[in-house]
Image 1: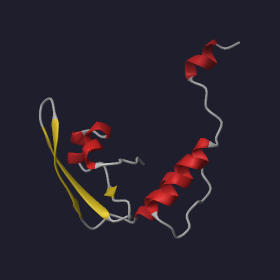
Image 2: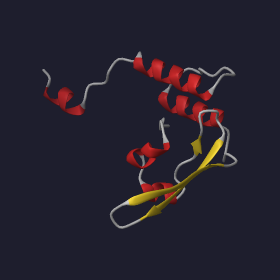
Image 3: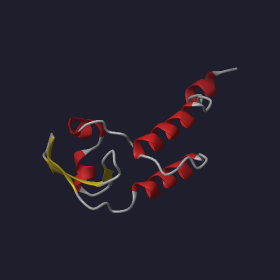
Length: 108
């Protein structure tokens, strides 16, 4: 899952071809579905539209799957999607930092 702060940041965070191929599901800050349309050119993609739509599945289901994939405890009370996102990020921030492969390889 990713937080994209504004429409103008969509194509700087995601590949246009992946959006066009339906590889992402989008929600707004309230958890309502969002449709994102792009046109994909040879060298550049263009954001065509961002509009409300029915969601493919509830954002709560996406949060549960995301938390499970990260091995997080369930942090979901009936609250806003942004509150849940911030709690997940806070819990991730409390984890010890993983050392990179190269630092493990060259450390004594």
